Length: 281
Image 1 (cartoon, rainbow, N blue to C red):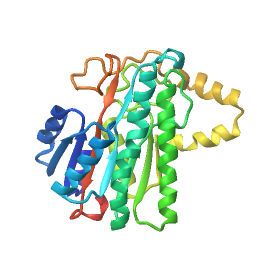
Image 2: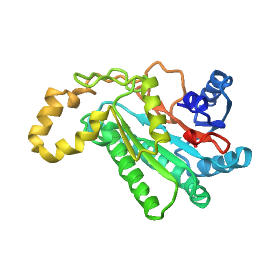
Image 3: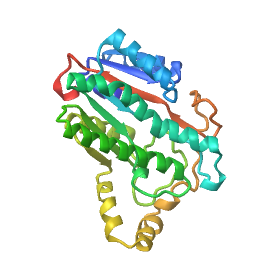
Image 4: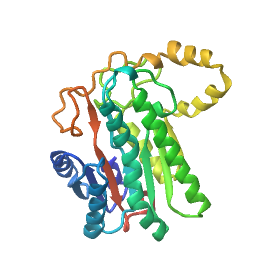
């Protein structure tokens, strides 16, 4: 997404990641595309978030677009087998951190009456998913919070926009081992393109694939037992995590305390586009 944002006119890409080597890797990879900077940030720590935001503003000016894509999944264990630490970490990184990051930036955006925050949730936030119950809970939280703030901003007649994205499993390695009978695992490049397009078009919500927009309709129309049978058994959704392994051989540093089965994408991506074309600002 960072590369696409630069290609489409973003003045600067600023990466927040818990792993400094990841930041340097992306900076080197995208240096020919435009101005790329980064800060080492643990988004689970509010004090660090606040200091990182002030440093970002002091060094680069106001943020126009925030894309939040930090997330972890700990395992495919059933809820009764999870530890309190598993639950707390998942909710903190996947649900609380996006709220905290948005909170420190939103006041300035509202004051300027300009800005866009895109929150990457998950299709798991629209379906009840066995063997990833807490992950699903965290993504349900993001969808409910993000869309509620969208309505608040609309009632304020603010020009600041919120876009909520709910993609199916993306082939980034984070969900290695998942199986999907009907819906294909998403291609990262194509998915990133759809997310950028949703921001450009000021979409309120974007399910990926598009058919996921109709999940709520089928939940309302079908009896629970029939819905479970169709989506769980026929479509195989309730068995996608049966053989989950995660990104076991990743050399990247995960969130502190992660075990070997954890997968994490710990980067929030910021685009500061004061001088950019409207399509990315």
